[in-house]
Image 1 (cartoon, one colour):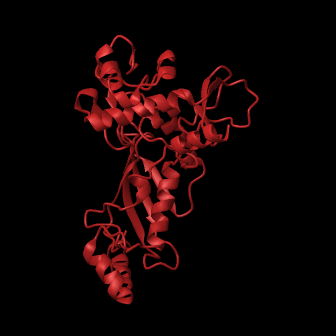
Image 2 (tube, rainbow over the protein chains, first blue to last red):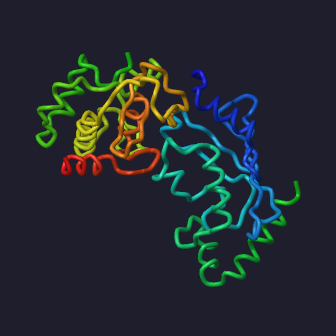
Length: 151
Length: 149
């Protein structure tokens, strides 16, 4: 593999020196482009109290293309599917090379606080979120308790 | 090496310039910028383009529509002003490579006044004609600046 670009080295150093509150991103020992991420569920969201594991991979042409990010911990959210794939514009067509690992993870954390059932990835979850929000939130809390709290 | 638009690959140039809608007399005098210097040697043999940021195609795989799109983009990028860093500007860091500007670095200035290394921003503009920092569409802003001048 080619030498690690200066930008990735810099971003990694800054993530270590000034970590984002509620987010940890540690590069894998054998692959500096692969990060083990933990995001804490935001306060006043159904995910509060949960620790959500994600994986983040910086593709070969990063930052010209977006990092690949996926939830590993199961989560009940209209914009995150069974496989942990995330429907978030900045990871797709709204990506810009001025964004960073830090801003991507903050956006994902913000997505947990503000689910958007009108742009769903998990259709059944989004449907329930629209027709019966209180039941959807109950489910999200239950999943958080079951899958994101036993680490 | 690695310049996807180098003159020796005349086939690629003619492929891109062959369309009527992209003939611009002024752009012919400028030498095309280097877009892909950073590519590893094995990928540099066949130029690749990005009709949209997430799409990568070799020049042979481009549809006619994509060729036109990319040719227009090349023409437009060449109209954006460039300069060299003289050490006394407000911006000190290129947000794309996160490297500090060094005296003598080739820079490109976007209509929204954001500044980047020429190599860094050209690589991005070939994928998307938007400013990475403010997301302002570069083509619209360039047209406006022509109209007001």
